[in-house]
Image (cartoon, rainbow, N blue to C red; front, side):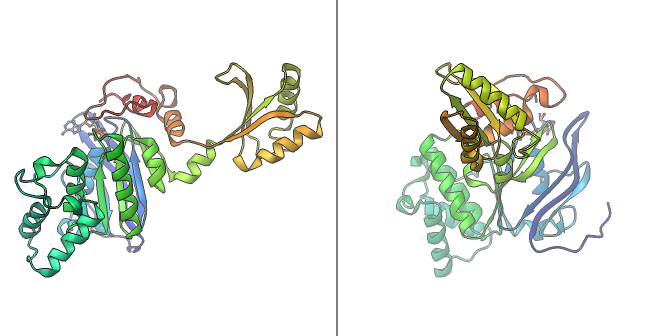
Length: 355
Ligand SMILES: Nc1ncnc2c1ncn2[C@@H]1O[C@H](COP(=O)(O)OP(=O)(O)OP(=O)(O)O)[C@@H](O)[C@H]1O
């Protein structure tokens, strides 16, 4: 491997080039090129077995890449791992805590084991972290009495002890109830507001949509999408139009199809569908902020819409399009998502990939 590094741009926190990991004949991660910038809350998405944990393990130096390289803070994981790890707080698996010790005492033990001298300054740091993870009220409670969400947050607290620049969380909401999921979401937002870069692997797309600014989507070890959440959602925006009767629907459909791609370049697709009440709906692939214009266009042709709804894009739908059976080669086999009680459509989709 070539030791010569390109000049490091302080803004780039993670950069992988052609990162690959094979386990025998199975290529778990294939030719992955990722970039995470300082201040990003980066969502790392993919169905079970798509290579997320393998990638995180390579980034943390827990396993060696078969090919390619990973740079963190401009340093190569192959040569400068100790320096890199000092700047990262990560939870890949739940850390082991002493069940009979309180949350604060557990953090004290971890701080002492990691070489922090227990003094006033560190007590203040532990208090600060307990505030960040919203466990200050429960700091004296024995760990064994913590709920799963509290345990997960204490794990994140432990990862924050060394005041890392980058926080890596592998499926932090697995197994949590909705309240626990919301608490983790708040925590991630708080970390972002404190200037931390967050790398979050998750299967809960609505959560990722709410907290992440950028995402990468993996399928069978291959990167199928990388970009700003806002841009991805924009590509999935639709305007739904319902007319008063069948004749008007047909006329509006014909008009909009004629205008599509010609006079109106922002209208990329026009199709007819049915809503839940079995009414015909015209669906336009167009930016939400064009709704008033659509209304006006129809009215100019004496076509008056009964309803016009801009429909926001959802990461779930973008994801489904990218990882659905038709979107990539190979079978799509349903299964059970290990370690999760998530039951949404997205989760069902995420169950899909074959290990
Ligand atoms: N140590 C290993 N030996 C052999 N195969 C492995 C090993 N670790 C992972 N794999 C395989 O590599 C592929 C990617 O697994 P990985 O755990 O990275 O996926 P993931 O996206 O994190 O999935 P999950 O959401 O289930 O954790 C899977 O097919 C998995 O079975």
